Length: 43
Image (tube, rainbow, N blue to C red; front, side, top):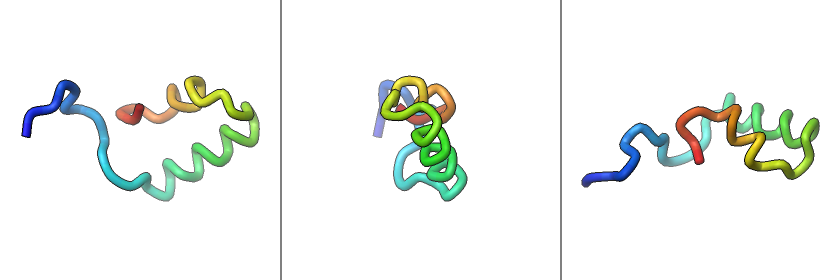
């Protein structure tokens, strides 16, 4: 299958990624675009 952005990670978040999201959401609130900048390969 061809994708427009083949470098994107697909599927479930790893435990490390989940921990990053939880930590940043606690610090930044619901500023999801800023949180996303800390998760390379995710949108």
